[in-house]
Amino acid sequence: MCLAILQLKGTKLISKGIFKIGYEQNPHGAGYMFVENGKVVVKKPFWGWQEIYESYVNDFKRCGNNSHFAIHFRLATEGSIGMANCHPHEIKPSKLALIHNGVLYIEYEPPYDPLEDKSDSAQFADYLSHFPDNFLTTDCKKELEELIGNWNKIVIMDSDNNFVILNEENGYWKDGAWYSGRVTGVEFEEGAKFSKDEDTKFVNDDWKME
Image (cartoon, rainbow, N blue to C red; front, side):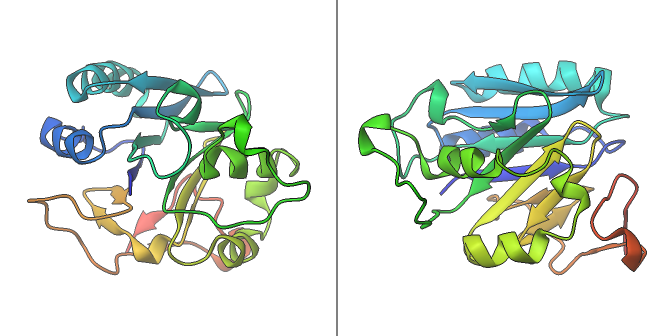
């Protein structure tokens, strides 16, 4: 059911072994995003773990000290296999994008036409496109978590290098990166959280691990 990863800026490269396992277990397309020159850069689709890993290494070496990275390996549950349903999904081009692990059961108005062949993740990105550009800096986390249900995990990034992890507590931290699910052969830090002053909510450009 997909693997989503949020890697904090200034951390070490994620190993090629994790990319290999992530892709082999979720082989329906991969992609990642980061911030460069004040824009969210989305790179997809990749159809092999070596291909995405080589691209990721080049971009992370260039931008990883200044930008968080969000990486996704897809296992298709809804929508066809192809670029359009590969993650990340742009919410607002160059401004906001997301990656998702889970299955969303949301009734939109008006409902989507099945012939559009949009995955549940792509539909949710469309839904969020109606939010203000700065919605990550508002107290919307609880509202969105109630909407998606606790079995879904979503990472959203904006062009100011802010991010939010919806249902973060249902994932795992390892070496400054959050994983939406376990990866074979990797030991995770269960219950690891971030800390920051209450008044800044989850605008977490400089959060630290406890």
